[in-house]
Length: 421
Ligand SMILES: CC(=O)N[C@H]1[C@@H](OP(=O)(O)OP(=O)(O)OC[C@H]2O[C@@H](n3ccc(=O)[nH]c3=O)[C@H](O)[C@@H]2O)O[C@H](CO)[C@@H](O)[C@@H]1O
Ligand SMILES: C=C(OP(=O)(O)O)C(=O)O
Image 1 (cartoon, rainbow, N blue to C red):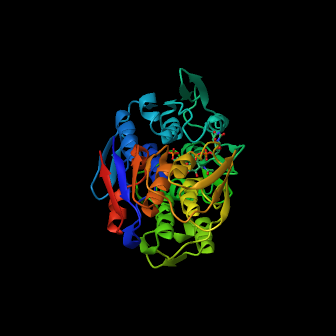
Image 2: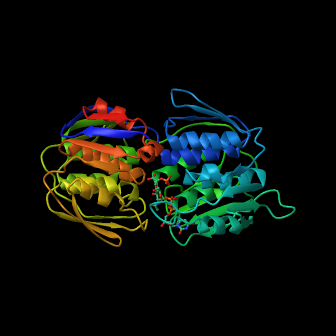
Image 3: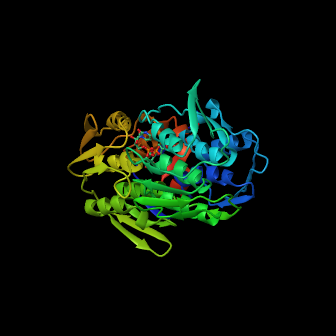
């Protein structure tokens, strides 16, 4: 099993390119299934989750060719098996995003229930309820969601959907299903994440009639058919935020090419309050940091609030900053698993339910630590970059799910980091 060996204490300097967003690429690969015509998706990151999604799509009978330049050419004209089996879904929750498009295009879909994962229970009841409002008949059998259209129907029907809470993948499933439904769908209370906006743009390029994506009300007028299109995946704001925190922690001066400051408002505001210099410059973001920063309190909320996917990385920064800070995690019930590992490196953190209070220390000390989930892994890498001595981060298959060439990018910036078996 691969591990990352980091010798801490080096500042980060130079330039690094931010990849396409995992959390946009995965729904968009599913959205490409909405048309029988060829689709071209550019700026797809080379990640384990993308490999899993391509495997899933090919398993359905589509062809997908992934070029070294990050372009995926996908042809689902011969798709004959609208199913997402458990073996594939269990390693990647985003497989649930196949449900909306398959049902909309083929009138049937069988998708394994994703189940819980380390960070929380993560139910999909809202996805099911929303699609049922559009007329889908969905039963749960043997761990699968088996969905079909009522007898005599050829398309889903547009509906007014208001979910009980804001759900990102739920909003994505509804947008994709509504694009091919009969009539109008209104999504009240939808997620507003940049990945939602990007998916909306892709659907429009395919001929869908979508308005209000990225706002608190999305309107979609269904069309009978969508056509092939080319779309480029938006830059990964979480990868970008991870590098911002890494530079803030180690000190240095880095240009994050293609980073989009407007997608990271809540994170950048806090980094500036902490004492880092972050500015939007042509073609990306420049971050500079020197000396010890001041720890910052925050609460994770839906976009445009502070993203839950940045909580662990910012906590690593807080741990070596000056003062106490309170972090409240409101999205997931178990997303503090990095705490005990950070503490093994000398961090001082108290956890009480959904609140973690860090008491800044001057130094962390390198240790062998275990990654428990994707963003927890990134926080341990940041901690390793600033710690004294060697840090060995084990179980980095979590990291590989969502970061493209993390160690190569950090090496390029001057870090001493290598992948070991
Ligand atoms: C709002 C939010 O920050 N969502 C995050 C969530 O998206 P993801 O789409 O995975 O999760 P949702 O946005 O759907 O979930 C938000 C909350 O709603 C609950 N829920 C959701 C759907 C449902 O049918 N029933 C239900 O109870 C979830 O358990 C969670 O507490 O995880 C992703 C990976 O970490 C992040 O990129 C997203 O930013
Ligand atoms: C937890 C994450 O992803 P997923 O929803 O694929 O588990 C994430 O992107 O931080």
